[in-house]
Length: 190
Ligand code: IMP
Ligand code: MG
Image 1 (cartoon, protein in one colour):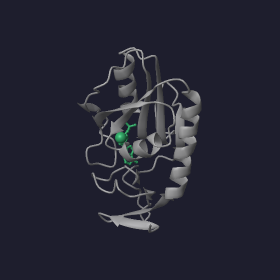
Image 2: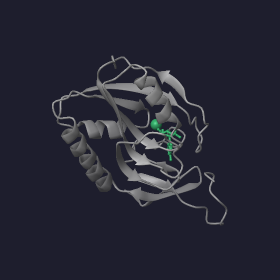
Image 3: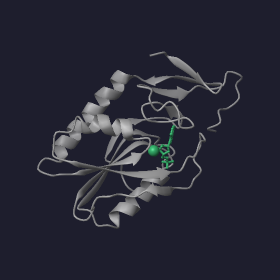
Image 4: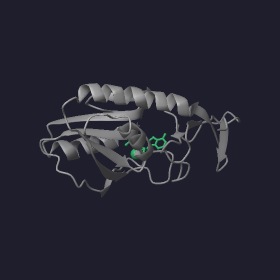
């Protein structure tokens, strides 16, 4: 895996290696396995970004569980949030009375997870928790805790391991971050 990749003239540098990510996924699954003994949680993946994390996490989970998926859209093809969350695919499962674990790739502004929480908790689940691989804590505006966090990261644009840049590069096995422009100009995230 290279340490640096260029996409559309933007330079991205290696941030979290495949090994670091896989170790963290095992850690998160171990916590969930402990907390959900004798329960049958439903893991709800938020498409598209969480599909790789979801698949890796679920294969480290040893408690009986079910899975379902929701599709949200907020980013379009840009590097910054459009600030609007839309539901593109609803759940197929019955949430009432069940233990729900929402699986996110990354929480940035917190808008998507806030939208999700309201959508799911109005169906009266027995419990509602969130696991996210990445959390941009300094930008996320949340009035509830995130139960399982892989890595807290600075508010930078990251790609790979399910995270896209204009729908591409989701298949990278590691996570890369947008490098600052060498001219000294600020990145588009500012
Ligand atoms: P939020 O609603 O601002 O918290 O953003 C949530 C969604 O935006 C995530 O599930 C990702 O799909 C996407 N997203 C946020 N930050 C990034 C990033 O740095 N790279 C790629 N996608 C991102
Ligand atoms: Mg996402």
